[in-house]
Structure formats: C-alpha cells, structure tokens
Length: 193
Image (cartoon, rainbow, N blue to C red; front, side, top):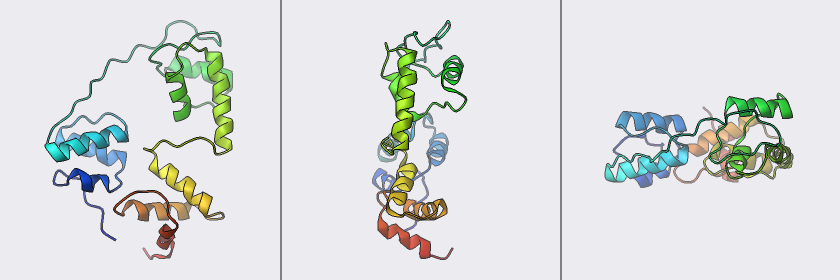
C-alpha cells in the first residue's frame, strides 16, 4: 500500500485524482493557493486539477442568486426559476410536512428542475422521495463517495457494524485508485492500529 500524498502544488493532476481528499482539504488547498474555494467537491476537484497541470487559477462565472420569493407561499404557489431554499420555503415545508422535514439532495434537485410546478406538487414529490429512500431506490451522487461506500459495504456484509464500515473506508481512501467498496477491503478489519 502506498501512502496518500499530501495535497500540495507539487502533485500532478493524475496523482491527485487517484486519491481521496475530504472537501475540507480541497477548500484549504484552494485558499492556500489563492484559488476560489467555493463549490462542490466535483467543482473543486476540476479547479485543482487544472491548477496542478497548468498553474491557471480558474474563476467561476457565478451569477447572483435571486432573492427569495416574496409573498406568502401556499400549496397552489408556483415554484419559480432559480429556486432558492429560503427560510420562508423551509417554514412552509415544515408546516406542511412536519418538523421532520429537511432539504435533501434529491428533493433540492427536483425543486430546481421543476419550475412552474406547485408547492403542492413538491410536497407530494417529497413523500415519494422518502418512500424510495426507505426502499433503497435513491441514487447517491458521485461526489458522495463515503455514502456510496458504506451502502455497498452493508449490502455485502450483513451483520457488520458502522464501525467496521468506517474502518474499511479509512483503509480504502488511503489507497491509490477508486474508492468503491470491494470485498478485499475487509483486510482492514484484521489490521492492528
């Protein structure tokens, strides 16, 4: 096993992409190197890769976020273009769904891609998303490698604990290459720390 290299400007992008780095590490690196530190892991990874290969400091072309919707929200209100998850929206959904409501990734994607539908439609979709999640039918986006790894670990290792999954994940993320679960990762459970 090779040790994961420190993220610094001496790395080339191929080596960088072959190891797992936490988002916090990517943000810290961007700030140290004067790169824009905003964005998801996939955006940061692209920005850092380009910088490591070319020295170029990419800036994103961000457009200003529109202000939150004005007025009262009801089940008959329409979801606007460029949906923003405002406190007003959160309060509406909490009142309609209950205190257990939370903006999850799948629901946020649905809201942002369904302008013109109603908030009533959104409430129905939220319940569908929760049901699909219970059945294990929701997809995990590629940037959530830890979540995908743990899900796949449990699918292959009934009766194992989260502590076991985390130990295997910590082993895996230190290896060169992909971070997908493989049965061989169970070797980490036999290692002394």
